[in-house]
Figure 1 (tube, rainbow, N blue to C red):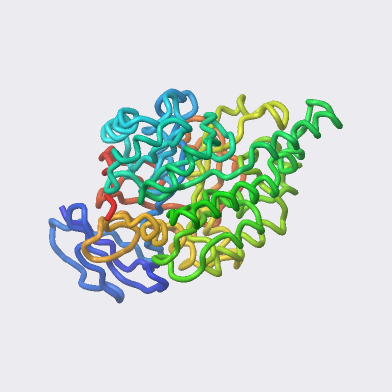
Figure 2 (cartoon, one colour):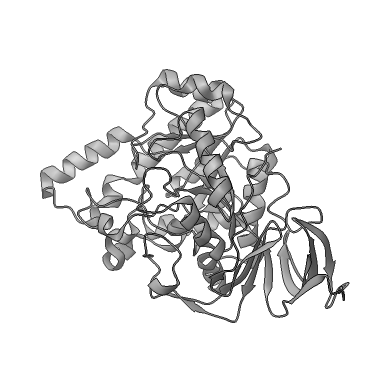
Length: 446
C-alpha cells in the first residue's frame, strides 16, 4: 500500500513549505508543494492529513551505546531502537564498548545479525580500535562500516588506545573515517590525584568538570588533529565540550573537510550550573562544562563550525548513577528526547527549524556518505518524522521507552511532540505507541 502525507509543513534543505509526500514501498515516490498537492484519491492509498504538523527527515544519530551484547540490564538493541523511533530517530550508529567489545570482525558481524532481527530503526555499527587490532582494518567493508572508533581517554569499557605505533597504523592505513573520544588520560589522572589529596575521595559531582577538564579535552584532541594532518586522515571528533576545541576543526564545505566535529545535545542544553540540581544524572564523559563553553558550542552549530548533533545515548541503571564524582557511572539516556530538546531550543530562538534538520539529518548523511537517507527527496528512503508543534509533552517515567527507566528530562515539558515516525516507509510510532514491529534496515555507504 502507498501512503500519502498531505498538507504538512515540510522542513527540508533549508526551506519550510506546505506540501505532500507520497510513499511507495520503502521509498519517497514524490514531493509536491501546495495544499492538497497532487492528492491521491484511491482506496489503495493511505492518506494522512498532516495539516498543522511539521514533516522532517528522520534523525540520524551517529553515536549511541545500545548496550548489547553484555550490558543488557541497561538497554538492548530492541528497547533502545524503540526509544529512538519514539523520538524521531530513524537511524543509529552504535559504539563498540560492549561485552565483548566490537573489536573483531566476528563481534561486528554479530551485532549486524542481531539488529537484523530486533531493531525497529535503521542501524550501523562502528568497529572499535585497540592497541592490538589495527591489523584487522583491511578486512572492514567501507560500504557497511561508518568508521573506526578510538578512545583516546579511558571511558566506559576501558578501550584506551595509547600506543603510538597502533595510533599511527589506524590513522595512516585506512580511508575509513576515524572517530575519537578525546580526553588526555594523564591530565585526568593528575587532576584526580590532586583533588583527592586536597579534599579526600568523597568528591561530589562539582569536581567532575575540574577532573575531566577542558585542558584534558583540548590536549588530546589537538594531538589527534596533528597526527591526522600529518597522515592525511579523515578525523571526526565526537562530543566536543569546550570552546577551545572548536579552533581545531576545518572550515569550508563539508565535502572538503577532513577534520570535523560533533556536539551532543547535553552539551548544548546543560552547563556546570546545572550540577547543583541534577547531580550525577548529568554526569557524562566528556563532562558538561561552563556556560561560556555551552554558548560557544551553540554558536558553532549555527555558523557551520560543528557538522552534526548527536546524543552519546548511554543508559545506566539509576542505581549505577549513585555515588561520588569518581564512582558514579558516566552517561545517560537521551535518544528519545534529542529532537524534542533541539526543537525546544529552537523555540527559545537558539536555533531555527531548518538548522535542527540540517544538523540532525542532512549533515550526518553527508558526513558519512549514507545511501539515500537524511533528506526528503524523491527516490530516497522514506525515513520521516511528523512533529505536532501544538501538543506539548511532559516527560514522565510512564512515557519512557528506555529500558533503564529514567531520564534527566523527567518533569520537563517539551513544547512539541513526535506525532508519527516512519522507517523505510513503515509507520512504526504513532501518538505515544509503537504501532508495528517492522525491522529496520542496515544502512549503506556510498
